[in-house]
Length: 114
Image (tube, rainbow, N blue to C red):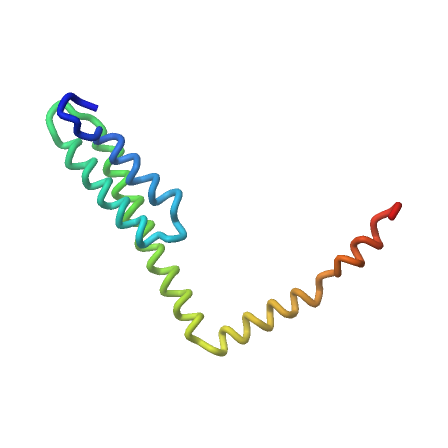
């Protein structure tokens, strides 16, 4: 940190990138945070004598891509959840998979020495 107590642009940019990389599941919310942090890092990196512009641009790009991907995933999940025939098909698939699994008692009986 400098004497003016401003955050390091490289740190802001890296936080922007990491918030999206680590948190892809809630991508919309963390993507917006990542975009804001990366934009702040980019703004700070544009000042004379400050490096880190590449990291800030990378953070901005990954946060943007993650936000878009999160929106697509959420849209796909919403489309599936709102479609009864899709839900029935998924439930049938899950039921069939569970029927093919062996039970815990069968596992215990197949272990030698017990």
